[in-house]
Image (tube, rainbow, N blue to C red; front, side, top):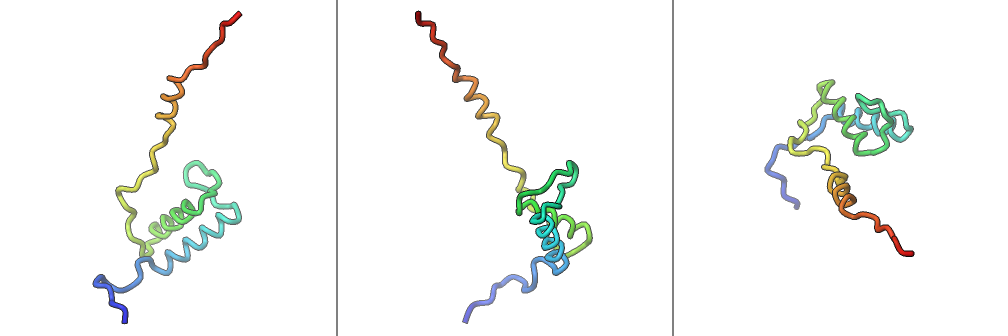
Length: 95
């Protein structure tokens, strides 16, 4: 027999939260899900899940709070730009 976990039994996410995420995923697949402030079309399934969970939290569904340490990944553009500046095109001045 399998051991039971020592933590509390029960659902981590409520049924209402699952319903909200399912609705957001469905809208994302149809291409009608828009992001909050900018209103751009959402194309990433992970972002659709995040939007669904956020809406569920606003409605008061059973959803754990978001993790504090998780932020948007830092972009590589700043390091890439500095590398681009150091490599200059060679101009040929041969006659």
